[in-house]
Amino acid sequence: MATDYKIRVQNVTKEYDLFKTQSEKLRSFFAINRKPVPHFWSLMGISLEVKAGETLGLIGVNGSGKSTLSNIISGIIPQTTGVVDVKGDTSIIAIGAGLRGNLTGQENIRLKALMQGLTNEEIDGLMDDIVSFADIGDFLYQPVKSYSSGMKSRLGFSIAVHVNPDILIIDEALSVGDDTFYQKCLDKITEFKEEGKTIIFVSHSLKQVELMCDQVAWIHYGTLHEIGDTTKVVGDYRDFVKWFKGQSKKDKRKFQRSMKQNQKDFDIDQYQASVVEERKTADPTEKNVEAKVKKDFYGSVISEKMSAGSRILTVLTLALFVFFCWTNVSGHSIRQVISEPSSLVHPTDHIDTTGSLK
Ligand SMILES: Nc1ncnc2c1ncn2[C@@H]1O[C@H](COP(=O)(O)OP(=O)(O)OP(=O)(O)O)[C@@H](O)[C@H]1O
Image 1 (cartoon, rainbow, N blue to C red):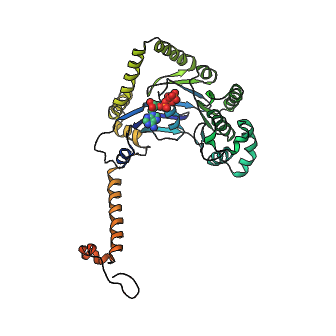
Image 2 (image 1 turned 30 degrees about the vertical axis):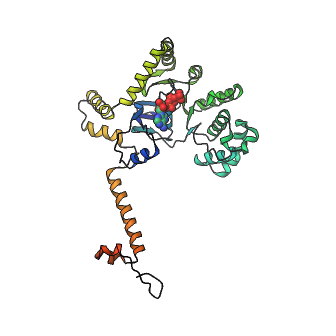
Image 3 (image 1 turned 180 degrees about the horizontal axis):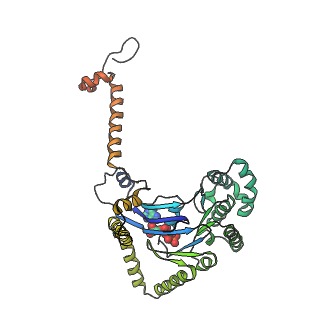
């Protein structure tokens, strides 16, 4: 892979456990689930690069994994395996993300800008511009949970473009605005492109994608189906959509079911083995390929489940906590309880002159 990238995504997968109940979820966290929980692989090994100053479009049918990928790149959710490398001292703004429903529009502006590293003085200087671009009137002082999706999008977009990020991730933000706002956003994105910023643009509007993107990635049921020149990829995707629309209802359902089944049946170990094989074929002289691939897969991810070590540590901590509480209640000293454990079940029953139990 080349080194002049701004964003590099390598062998990224995302697994979701399809829990039926909260207790099932909790048991899985402590890794004590007896019954296997069904899995769904939203991403099944995505690798791509975005150069600095490039606008990458992400297209694909509903549920194909576009938002999952853009959320992983923006750090909103962790990947299950793989490397996500965002180069340099980079700030990312994902438009739809991070607005707190209970805070007002104005409070959200401050919060998001502070999270981007701006000072209160800088935010005061930007506030009027952000408010006037978002154009949400008196709603600025209302909790964001009372906003329509269009208003949320306007506010999110306005904050994002005013805090001057290096990388802008736009996930469907333009699909909910009216025409005037849409034009304002397009102008702003063009300005960003001219300034050489990197943009990831997720959209169902192929016209918008054609207008704005330098290259396009077609995400297809969790896989990277095609990446490259905008006209070519969008053209191929249009052909697929035309083919799909030409199918009978029954065949459409059959196709979708089989694609989803693929995502349930995905085997991460098999995928890892295929990456090892690929690397060995590409460079037969490379040493320790298995260990390197394992590091690439799991080296930069935090497990969402407890390891055996953490489980033992948690159980020990809980046992110690119960022991100390019990000792305290029994009125004996720790030394007494250790030398005579049965004293735990025979609490002291007389009180000395200071009022403490003995
Ligand atoms: N928290 C979750 N738990 C289980 N499955 C999830 C979760 N989040 C997303 N998914 C599944 O992952 C798949 C990809 O979802 P994602 O939102 O990334 O698709 P998308 O391409 O952005 O879709 P759309 O175009 O409709 O916005 C979908 O099948 C979705 O149901």
